[in-house]
Length: 235
Image 1 (cartoon, rainbow, N blue to C red):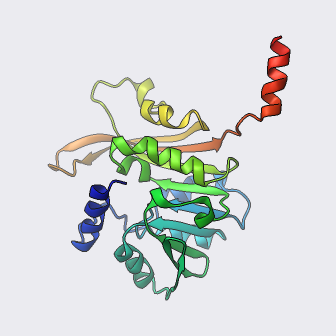
Image 2 (cartoon, helix red, strand yellow):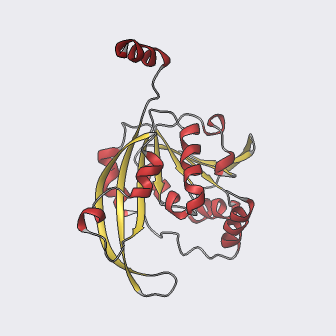
Image 3 (cartoon, rainbow, N blue to C red):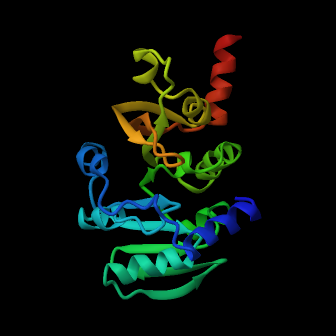
């Protein structure tokens, strides 16, 4: 993130303006993860995790969970509110908070390296992408590709505003921006769509939003040997 975005995020937690935090496990996670999940035990990365209770649920399924979060107040609240006394130690430019199967790296997602993160089998993204300003979203996806293996799968939940004049086909399809961001690195499958009317957070007026469940599978980069064989075939 930019320094301005970082300071804004930290200020939201200092002022406890965290209406975006869900006070329960996301129902789409518990409903669709079992069909998506790799065999346990596996390691699940949760970017921009805040104090999400979804991390508890994932750990209860037998996964090792590693999150990254900028705000130490959010991390401290997660462990305190769930009665989990954490250990803390430095790990590169980050501080690793850990209890049992759950670890959270305190620091900037965009400063994270694959060495900091360690091995990852799956990524769970609950609206982390869509919470970012549009200008940062391509950077977010590029960073994800740098720090997770090509074999990692992504379970992505998005909240998308539905255009009033959108056709049913558009509403039920892969979001154009998301396709543009992920197609180069991932195969995209849209697993589920729920269209609901919810109050606008700005003015309380009803608006139609779409909750979507995406399952992304990383594309392996073509090897130089494969490129060479393809060139010979063309010749």
